[in-house]
Each structure stands twice: as C-alpha cells, then as structure tokens.
Length: 227
Image (tube, rainbow, N blue to C red; front, side):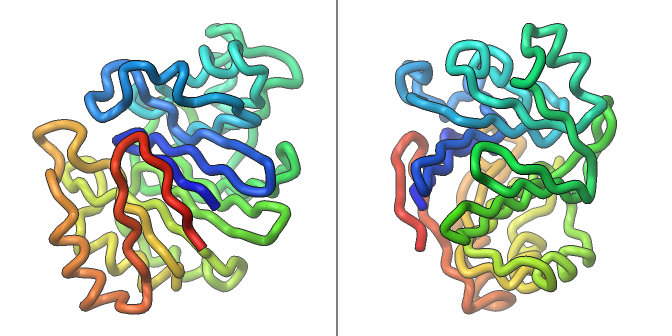
C-alpha cells in the first residue's frame, strides 16, 4: 500500500492498481501542494466522510476531471449532484452498508461528529489483495471501535489527533488499542493553529496504550509504503 497525505484528512491510497482519494481538501489547505491538480494523477474513486468544507473539498471537481466514482452518505448526494456529479458516477450509501467500488469492498461505519447532511462517517476499505484500511473521518473516541476488529483485520488506521474538533493524541492512541491496527497514520493536525501542531504526544501515547501499533511518519505530498 502506498499512502500519500496531503495534509488535514486528505489522503491517497494506492494498491492493487487502484487509486482512491479520501476527503480531498486541497483549496484552502495550507499543507496541500500548490500544484495539487498535477499531484493527484489517476483516481478511481473519491470517498467523502461528511459534508464539512474541509472534507468535501474538491471532490466534485476531481470526479468531473478524472471520471472517478464519488462515494458519500446518501443524504449528501443532492449537494454533489448540484456540483455536477451525476448518474453512475455518484454512489450514495449509509452507515453499516458495504458496497463494491472499483474492485474494492467499502464499508461505511459510524463517526462521532456533526454533519448537516445525514451523518458523519468513516470507511473501512478492503483491497483485492486483502489489505484493510480504516479512515475514521472526524470523530471523537467511541468504544464501539472495538467491534471493528471483530470483523476486520485492520492493517492501517488513519485517525485524527488534533483535538478541539476531534479526539486528541491520547484518545487516538486508545483508539488504536481498540482497533488492533498494525499501523496508524495521524491526520487532522497541523493544518490550522487551533489544532495540535506535532505528533510527539501521539508517539508517546502509542507507546503506553498501543505499543504494537506502528506509527507512520508522514510528510505532506510524499508517498510512503505501508505493509
């Protein structure tokens, strides 16, 4: 799996010849590359966790430009249609559902956060090779994360650590202990002054609460390999 973080909760995952973007917030994101349109390349699917602007981002524009599928909660579909994403390109689902997308199995799971359109969500994505990635979206810590490991062997979790609008570093480390994930990529930090500005506290908390989970060090725009 190749993971590229574009700052905030904006990530690209590439495996088995499939490329997906999640929460593609580029415009207004100080961590994203200025030439982001050249940076994203081919995209098969775009997943949006909830309707806040720093998560919907440029989802519609990217789908229009690349032909990628757009996956979101059913209630957000009208807004995406108004932005020009139509027909088979737009795939609405709901919490608990699992849909096939471009060779992937995509399950939408709950997130503890606000949203104007439906509900906030996370995604558990299984690639054809079996690699399993969990993107939590914006969320507080919730104990039902323990249930995810009953159904999925999570190779990579992408969790917010910024605090204020989401769980913080310690809570994200506890989430790793709930999930039993092999690796974790911290997100939703450093974008704006109100958020946590570094990952040191998260690294220390991982050693205490989830010592078997590997911390993935990320630099915006640079891809890393995750086993």
